[in-house]
Length: 198
Length: 198
Image (cartoon, rainbow over all chains, first blue to last red; front, side):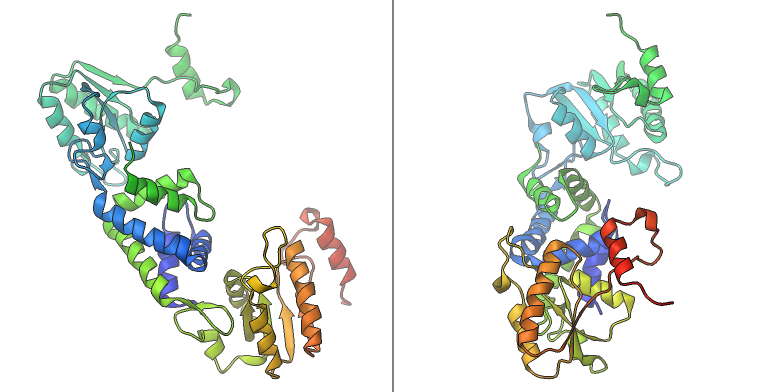
């Protein structure tokens, strides 16, 4: 009943993160019913982005220039590197506008279950950057998950061997606007442990 | 910070039905991080679907052939036309596999608020099909919303004028598997009114 071209489109759309068969169908129909404004523009934009946007060879950020605009920005502090799991995390930190150093995107975290070891991630290029001598501090801004913490641990060991004296991780505590009643025990005990003198 | 090509892609994705800025970003990153398997395939599929899939000139269904496979199917009953709002509704009815007549997709419903009048919808082609004489029954399978019902009413008036004797609409009642406690009053009173002798 549904033609093959349409089936392929629905199948591809429904495999995107957060979408399923039903939303895939809905989006495919929307695209075909508003061709001029959506379908053609999206196909063109996908093509352009696929050709122009590349991984930055230094930090792993996605940008149309290589090295990326962040790595090329001379106003940023080259002595601090903030290590993040994904480009989305880099964007989140940039939105906070509270970090003016450089980044390094790992492209994932160590995961024995998914078969992701140190070779699958951008570890060696991070170590190379550290060996160039100008790096004073590494901030490990990885997610507070088991895999994120394992990766932090692994990186800390290796970075110490390379002679990086200042290795830090993001503070754990009560999020801004957070209510204690809704927080898990782990966060609360971390917040208590790292309590600050007022 | 985010390059223009990427911004355009995120903007276009986030305007698709059911998506927002956050899911748009997530999907854009997923596409760029899995280029070979997703981005190229999706761009290609969008292009192919945009070129090949067309509106059927008879019923308004989306298909790669025109007239569509449903209109061309000689096993289907040409004397019954089921009028639906959208292609998604046509697919839903086809999934139920309980209708073997022809369809007519209106492409929307009358809505004074959105400025959609009879000229914006596939009304005239429906009336033309009815005037060809072979149509015995019209089933108005429009959504049970205010706009859907207004459209049903409008169509009924005009179809009667064209001499169509048998005009029906879908039955209202308790959905299969439905629990009375969770049903709204309108559905319950409709189910009571149309009660059947056991």
